[in-house]
Length: 355
Image (cartoon, rainbow, N blue to C red; front, top):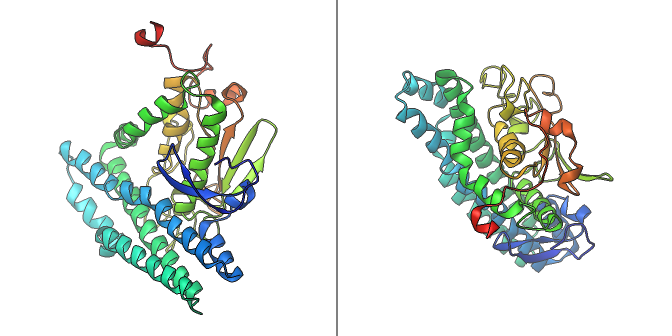
């Protein structure tokens, strides 16, 4: 599937993900999947609406995987360091977020799956409450998803309080090590032509942020920005870090503000764009898309314009850019993470490659 080409709305198999994804024009793929499900129900296209509704489960599945263990991984990292005060901090966070946020992720996921299946049954039966059934599934996933983000952000905040914000680099490297390796193997211009890498990056952005329920209506909507040298994907806000920084989107108020007071960077770090006010969750976007790829393959794979606290709390929009070729990425992108443009693109050849 090529999101830059006009193609009919539907489902196709995407080899690099090993599963099905949505197909359609770029403008259509920018619409949240729930939005297009509602549209197809209104048009009476029951089978396509059911296929698209089932797609929401696939879009959310990776998030189910990572949120199912990342919080425990961070807590295990802290326990291995025998930091004092950890139990008291966990109790404080639990009191802030509630027992259900801490303990209800798997049950919430199962409820969401059950509601999605019920939505499919209602669509197939042309039930008058089909839209309501689908909305119930969407709302269920939003609640479960947002609780999981809050808990993860909360334990990162605990790590910062007890160890110091410098620990965020080590923690995120631990959590995303396999992702770094996959990026290096797949997105190196010495391994794969950039035209294919760019296509894959665009698909991954669209698919992933549909799952995060990005956008002001939390339907997964994304704004597309087409420029001469790059393609932009704007989330207003994204459903994870951006939503956590928004007084409007986060129920109970922005998480860096009271009563949560979750950590943002207080001094410049190369792994956080050398900016003050980057939330501890959003740090991983810099590491995954800019700093680590620059260090490993000589260029960022995606360039992120992230919100900072408190300046952007009213509008914590975030834009991800995919350049039409890595050579077009400006020097300023390298410099803001403390790097210089290398004299070649791609990883250094290994002895095996040289042979």
